[in-house]
Amino acid sequence: MPGFKVPQPKAKRRRASSDESWNGGAYGMPQPGRIIDSPAACPVERCGVVADTVDESDTKLNGWVRAGVYGSAEPDRIWCSGLHAAYGVALAELRLPGSGAGRE
Image (cartoon, rainbow, N blue to C red; front, side, top):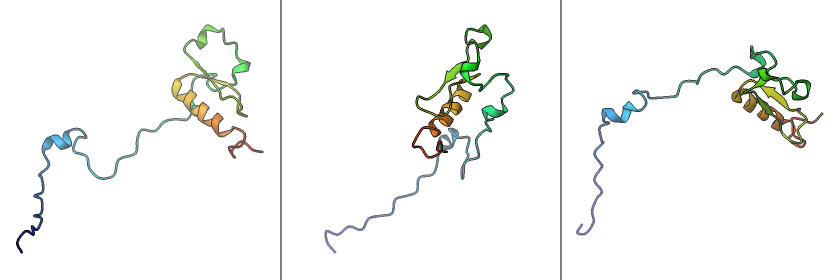
C-alpha cells in the first residue's frame, strides 16, 4: 500500500562490557546484604540503656548518641553508635500512641 510503512524491528544492541562493569557483571536476583546485628547484641557496655539512669557528663560517653521520640512510650536511651540510635528511634516511633504497637 502506498503511504503505509511497516515498522521494522529494532536490531538488538549487544551489551558492551562497560554496561556490566558497574556491577561486576552480576545479573539476576540481588544477593542479601550484610547482616547487621541488633543493638540487643551489642557488646558495648551501657549501649541502649535508659538515658536518665546515666550521668551524661561522664567523659566515657563522648561520641555516644542520645535518642528518643517525643510522645513515645519508649524512654530516651543512649547508644554507642548512630546505627544503633537509628534502630532505637525506629523502635520508639513504633511505640507512639495510636500507632497500634504501643497500645496495651
